[in-house]
Image (cartoon, rainbow, N blue to C red):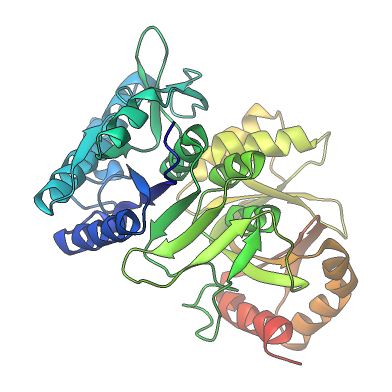
Length: 396
């Protein structure tokens, strides 16, 4: 087995969407190879909704008929975007003088449990990837998907699945680390669009980053973090469009008591009957329907929220749980402080007082391990985040 370190580089949709972005990605590959690494690339589909080959644009071809879409057809169409990206990125690398080969998840032998639209990777046979690396080539692998052993049916991993693929490939190859390339320079204390003074974090632990990602920091998918966490695989979030080192996510301890502030804006929010809402039910809501939940610290009310365009998922989660909404849904912002649990619990009353002093009404709040989440009006979101950031990071 080669003693040369392997680096997995995952490039998101904006990193492969244009010729300029792809050439910047090529330079990251070239630099890593110059530094003595063997490189494997995992790619997402190109661009975002509305762009010709973006996943949602392709899925619109199925949805245009307005009828039920079979899960197999959905997954087969879903895989097309990444296949296009892999072929084009492989071609771009070769034209730049770097030997490369584009691979579907079947060719890369990424196997899943067979659940359409929400599959889990069960196994990766790294031998084909190792063969290409031994030849001096850069494998370019389609992200977010895999195949079922025997049938070779394509299944997809759900939204954010390319991040998970990147980490899983890294684990299978025993990589030195996985770099997640995106359009931001790393993980910030909060969204810089809301707080221009937000600073980039040099490092953050797996558990805190998972909470940041679950509750709004969209630089990496939570499932990818869990895969890295379980295997102690270092992950770096960095920008395709910059040479800055980015943010390292690993098992090291976090220094600041409050690490960051995550935001879920415009969440369609309801309360439901408390019933017997277990942790398992809440995890199922989140995993299958992208429905977030909290239990209000004052009233015990169960609060559910989904992005404003996710009404059907919210309705489905409530219906399948046999519960009933207590009020019509309203759009709310969910703002979460992430940090040391004891620190967040100790400062919870002061946090509520701080926002009350700014005349910002908190409808619900939950203090959970590593997180305190506040549900407020969408019109107060920016002011609330700036107030909380100032208190946590800008005052002595």
